[in-house]
Length: 399
Image (cartoon, rainbow, N blue to C red; front, side, top):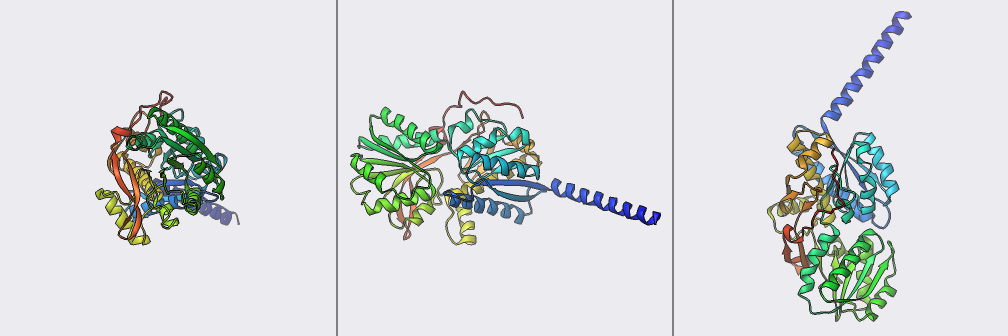
């Protein structure tokens, strides 16, 4: 009995050691990406798009044999659209080894995660949120901001406004950080360009009835109405505005409004709408054409802006793996800071001072292309045109 017990104990110990070695080897051979995104609530559609774009990039990389000797593993978590939910699920992901994070929809979520990255020994790629605070007081060598910031969007909006003769502007914006910051910046630009903001309306997230707000905008006498709305809120506004013939006799222009899903969900109601955008499937770079064709083959439809941005985030992460030859988050961060990175828009620079991706933006109009409505670029603004100075609030610390 004693020998049997000793043998059994030895076999159990050996099996445990073998399992530990296999687990260690598995981790060593993987790039582990954690997607923290909103899968429920008003912006659930945005989160679903982030998941599709991320998964597509991961599958593409693995189908090509991985990256720098690593396979790519993806784990996902619903942040419930709240900073508290994001911190909870992100910590769980990092404890499971998924310390390369991406996917937040909201700036508030990015800001909540940013101050935990050192504690988790993690890095974060913000591919959808836009707050200037991300590269301001929250800036970190562990945090990469891949979209144009709110102030960069406004820098793209200004040249368009200069071309317009209208003097009276109204703003309707979502009542959270993005809408608040963007509407404040737009007011400043309007004043500098000699325009009068006759109404500013902030609407709650998840608003279903825009009728009273549309009536206020109509009564304001505004000749240009600027929308700063996203997700289902943008769809609800556009469809309900059509019932009031809202775009007749006035210009409707949006910040981040001209996305393909919003256009598809509103029928012909967005025809003639104008606005700023940082991505569209109609942008004709070789990289974007190839991506769009590949996406169409799999899904039978054009990629949305969110899907493309999620895909781009993974491609940049994997470029960092290639540059560093490592799956370690700190090694990847060091390799990417200040690097030239391949994107759907061509090769762009990750600014070393604050890890902001310097990229172009477009202004365009919803028009018919091949029998379908698309956001059609009419003016392109190069990175150096919309680039903003590094915020004095950014104090980069060491990794």
